[in-house]
Length: 179
Image 1 (spheres, rainbow, N blue to C red):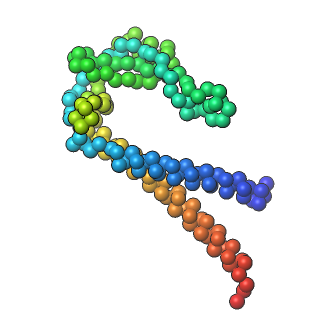
Image 2: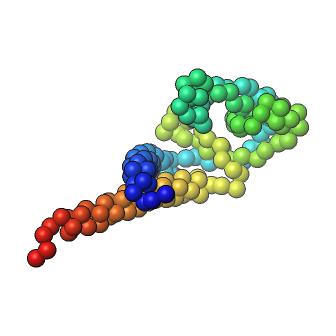
């Protein structure tokens, strides 16, 4: 297969990747600006959570494309609901692969240690994170992940622009008369 036959395909893939990079960069910048600083969390401590039930939940089917997505816009996932053993009212949800896997987790009733971080500015809502993490490490990890996505998106956009700059320069040299 010659390179001339591949040119339209390469161009289309490049444009699709450019659109993906711009979209990912935009949403990454949005998430980066909305990260609550570590000082915005109040550490409530580490609690033990035990699984109490598994329930089916309908979510958007992001794994399917085209006709499969139109025919099945949602899919069922199974959430294992955990409740803290100290009866403070904290809950945590975990997505199980199947109902059977979720039910097995519930039947085993193995406690899981999670750190609870309260968000006073948000009407005292809360999140749970791994017990070894702190508010600082949690926010640093979120920040790092979004900065990496933003950086890779920016690098691709720059490479795309540079590639087109080189292509257009070569075309203009070919078209201009030799001096």
